[in-house]
Structure formats: structure tokens, C-alpha cells
Image 1 (cartoon, rainbow, N blue to C red):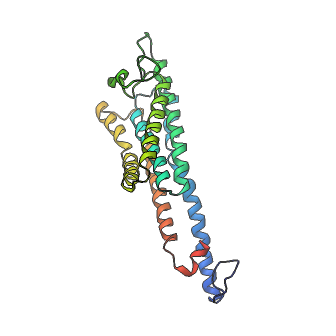
Image 2 (cartoon, rainbow, N blue to C red):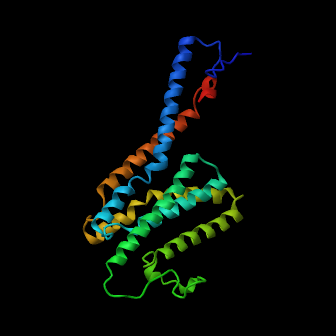
Image 3 (cartoon, rainbow, N blue to C red):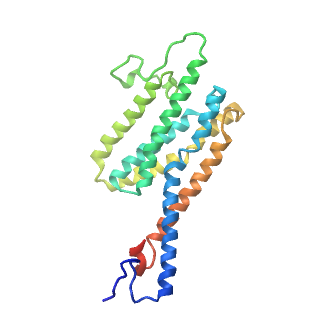
Length: 245
């Protein structure tokens, strides 16, 4: 039976030079893994910081599509629900929670900026024209996700989360449903740039849109890819030193 070195987790019978080489590789992988995990958690949020300050500086949110926020809210709600059916890496789960809060902050800023530009008082457009409780028949689809109060966005987000939770609870044991949840989350997130692209195409302008935000989207995806590659390698390392990863 092989004797295991407590310091490295490797067999004591292995050559010392090989053990040092493997230990160095393991340490490097751990550092890369930890850095990639941090980048994954905050990498999705950081790109919206320059967009946030762009809107604050210009006091104009017309260049930013709120449907980007809707896309990411849907994607991250679905991802959290998927976690209950099939657990995945904790950084992704934490990222989803932080991203939802970030999107609500962005929405609140945009709603407040738009309100500040209103000169003549017009009729408010809310999630339900009749107030509480909400009924599907009360919703005016012409103003969906273009409401004039922040509370409507919060209520809609909560409604999506509650309905999704109920459906997921009932179908949690159905493997195909769980896989569809995961696929839908990935697909929604992959399409986050489409609403912004559509807005830019309609307005024939990119004014008000932070170029830094788009560049940082790309950087965030690179870090996410790196993280998954590291995780893939860690799950496929040779069995004799897998214990130390």
C-alpha cells in the first residue's frame, strides 16, 4: 500500500523532483482557479459600473436598453433555479445573486433619470393599472418593461422568481426539465447584447452606451472561459495527484 505524504497528498514513493513539479503545478492551478472564481463573481457586474456613471454624468439613460437588465434578470433567476436541480460551482451561484441586485440598481437609476426629465405630469404606467392585487388582465403589454415606477420592476422580478420557483418545485425530479432550465439560463445570458444592439440599430446611434461596458463584457467572458477550462483540467488530472487539487 502506498504511503501518502501529508504535506503534498502525493505518494511518498514518487521521485522528489516529480513531487516538487506537481506541487508547483497544483499551487499555480489553485491560484488561477481562485482568481478566475473572483473574476467570475464580479466580472459580470463590473462592466455596468462605467455605464452607471455614464448615465449619472449625462443624466440621460436613453442610450441604455433596459431590456438588457430584463435579459440578465431572467437568465440569473433561471440559473438559481437550475442550481436546485443540479448543483454547480458556488461562484456562479453567488454571481447570479449579485447580478440580480445590480440589475435592480441599474433599473432604479434609469427610472429616476427618466422621471427627472418629465416636465408635464402624465399618467403613470405601472405593472397593474388597478393596483394590488395584480391580475394578468390588468397588465398593459404596450408598456411592459417600460414602466414609470421602480416598484413595478421589482414586483415583476419577484413574480418571475415566485412562478419559476413553484414550477421548479413541482418538476424538480424531471431531469429533462432541469436540463431545459440550465439551457435556457445559458441561452438568455448569451443574448444579453441583443437588446442593446437592437436599440442602437433603431436609434442609429451608440450615444449614451458605454463602450467600456461592451469591452468588459468580453473580458468577463474570457475569464469565465478560463475558469471552466481550469475546472475541466482539475477534474481530469492523473489519479495519483488528484487528491492535492
